[in-house]
Image 1 (tube, rainbow, N blue to C red):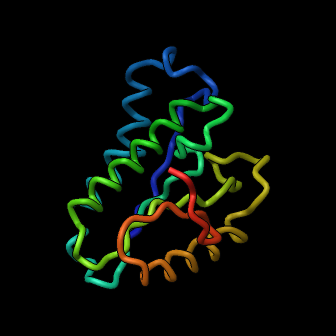
Image 2 (cartoon, rainbow, N blue to C red):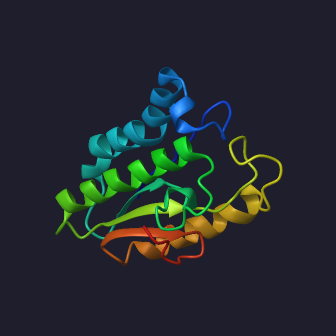
Length: 152
């Protein structure tokens, strides 16, 4: 299994994307999209058929579920990560590996903040269980920590 966890947001998560400084936008995109895809591209061949390649996405990366428009730079970066994973999966088709964009839910971390309802200790075992079970499902999947499909 190869699983890449990377995530950052803008200094003010609610700033409109049109108002984000260019260097800050580039930092978020480089961290949340380019970095994970480069790691996957560099190390993906080490994962055999029956294995899993994945990255930490977010439910906020769902275009379908964006009903409030807040956090649009972060949301856009995770949607871009999901698209990059889909592109990787298309090139990887037939290799018998699962590709997962993981949406772990709102978790108390430096990124999630103190108001998040779940601790790392509560959420991460579910994430791990879902990833382990997903190895039996070759192809691309966008899943939450419970194993439910998240709409793209």
